[in-house]
Amino acid sequence: MTTAVLSVAAGALLLLAQAGGQEGTRSGKELRKTLSDILASGEYETATPLTHPGASIWERIGRWIRGLFGSVGHLGSAAPVVVWGILISCGLVLLAIFIHGGVVLARALRASRSAAFEPGAVIGRPREEGNVLLERARLEAERGGFREAIRLCHRAALVGLDRRGLVRFQESQTSGEVRSQLHAQVSDRPLFDALLGIYEPACFGKASVHQAEYAESRDLALRLLTGIPR
Image 1 (cartoon, rainbow, N blue to C red):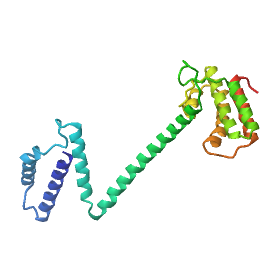
Image 2 (tube, rainbow, N blue to C red):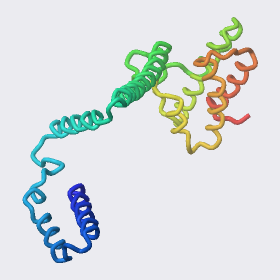
Image 3 (cartoon, rainbow, N blue to C red):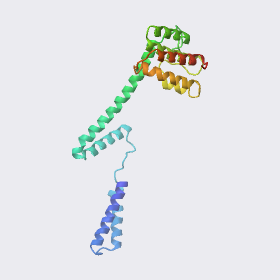
Image 4 (cartoon, rainbow, N blue to C red):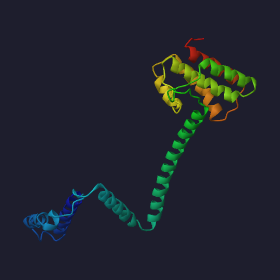
């Protein structure tokens, strides 16, 4: 409808311009009559609507896609560039979605492999006690396995937060989800953030770790486990 109105307005301006160029051969009354005839014409009043109320959603989508490719066809030699640009952009978006899903799935599988459950226990809740995990971390550190020791300290901290009722421990949850549960804990959240600053580069970024990183992780985990400040 907007296109029709613009066409009528352009036609009226053209008629006015022609009228001025012919030194008033047509009177204003004739111009008004011509414009009235255009507005009253059957072609103007029965123009095809942009949408069909009775069409299904798939028919509308198909009509929109056909119109899109029809519009691209008018671009001439630039049409292939536009089409390939759209396809590549869609492919990159899908690739990013799949990569993100793969990262989340890999973390969930890694967490599930490292978890142990008691018969009849609630799935997703930790079986281990925090002090047992810290003892395992100490033994790993004595053997030089600082990366695994830091992972155990991180798990001990999660168990402690769960036991204290500050978070609900789930094997597949992300660090961001844990932090969101700690948003009101002004004393525990900075400790957990500091522990993440060591744990994530060590276990996911493969950063170099030594005794100092393990010792700091153990201290932070113990404070989160017991709730007792240093």
